[in-house]
Image (tube, rainbow, N blue to C red):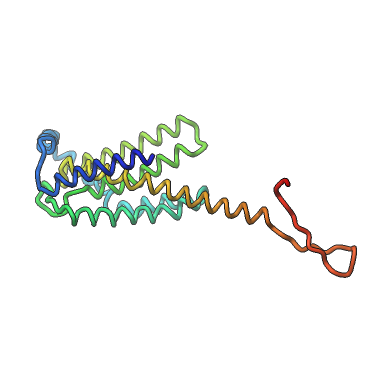
Length: 227
């Protein structure tokens, strides 16, 4: 997992270095040309709607639904989800400020795509938790495919709406993966240590119970581990 995160970070840094020069690759220009061929006024409302999932008015309900769904099953991840998503906001603001590349529509803050970054983290975590669940295999794979399709649809919508170049979208994917995977490892590591501490406390639990062998109560140690 960490190897993939390191590779993703290296990819992001490479893309950021090129983007900082304000250089546009042939792939950026080709992607824009191809997307223009697919433009149709009938698609505009759908593209705006899909893109809205990455806006604050789309992300906040998604996070709230995620917390509500996770709370009965895993309070650890229900509490971690809002923190992880807040981190994506900090990351994208810092990266946009550092790179400062214009969008295709000439607005500021093109690299990386914050929409893609945020949704890669949200739905990437959903895929991770889904595959760690006890749901039937078919449901896990269908859910994962659906989550991936949503992220790809939002990525395409950002190109369609001329909000980003292809390399901006790729940067959002790379940074999202580079951030999500170590975050998952950290949460699992902290949770593992917390569980270990609770088990150690339970094993050393001492209860005071009254006995009938004398006037004073006797301390009886209840050991839950074999000697």
